[in-house]
Amino acid sequence: MTTSSKPRIIKDYEKLDEAIKEQIKLVYPNGFSQHLISFTNKDGLLVSALPFETDEKYYLVRMTSQEAIDIISEDDDYDDEGTLKDESREAYEDKYADLDYIPENVAEEEEDDSSYDDDDDAGTDDDDDAEPAEDEDEDI
Image 1 (tube, rainbow, N blue to C red):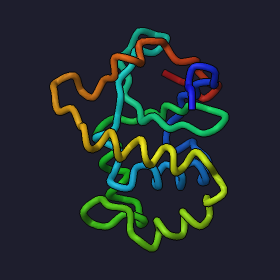
Image 2: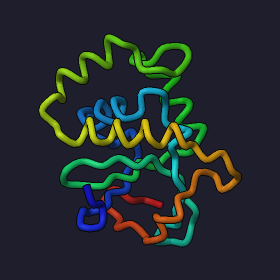
Image 3: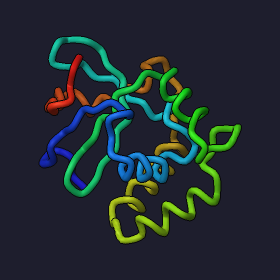
């Protein structure tokens, strides 16, 4: 999937549709905080977000590292160690089995996990220099 031709949507996790939240859980079964990226928004502020891609859109789900940890700890789909419970994973896999982008995203995240870069750039990805398009929910 190429993200350059897709609209980029910046949205808070709480404002996402439940279906998108469930799909994100499949892609990030071990939590969100270690996958956050940073970018400069239209107002020049440094913002952290969780990237998530569908067939039609590229989401940047706005959250801080602490918010990412809190979301997982408060979510009943995750166990005490922050891992997606098997029964939740299986239910979501069945529910979204017809979506081609879910396995692609999961495979990409597994590759990213195996080559995790633990340097001090706060998880920034130098390929994300372009400023994303803002959606109507942007309120930074």
